Image 1 (tube, rainbow, N blue to C red):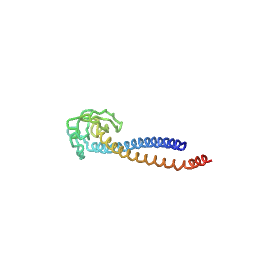
Image 2 (cartoon, one colour):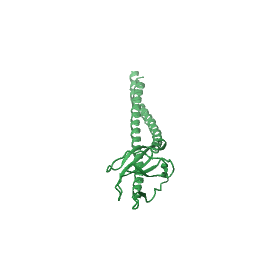
Image 3 (spheres, one colour):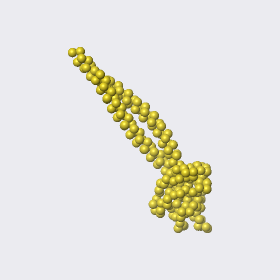
Image 4 (cartoon, one colour):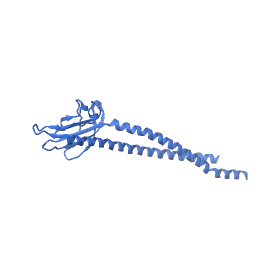
Length: 203
């Protein structure tokens, strides 16, 4: 009886330790994965933003901003796709992606010389967006141009959700395996105690 009670206590304590450890590991892995996905997301936005800046020029005739070429990524051409870019001159819209249609993204002016900024934006229909914003002074212009590129946060959330499901299944399987291993170790480890109890009972 004492052996069974001791085995049960050891199994419960070990199981709690395994569960707590796996939960902590799972949370850390999810945070690391989300950070990785966000970095890749921002890298794509960065490339698009720098491409827009490189394509921007000031007309020698009108002094207005002109795009020498248009970004070719189809995501920025499909109306209301969730992927948007726009250019503001001193706070006034001067260019935007076809995907924005007739909408404008509200951004916080990052100021001159502040470099790139991540901003949480709201797109058409209230869609949460993750955006990159940078103020640039183009050659032959005294104006401040704000370049904005943004994409849907739902893309990040979806990737994290899919990873979380796979991670949960993996950790559950690992947890069952570890608890089973602990159970058999306890049984094997307590066999000498059981034999000792039997020997004492026979004397």
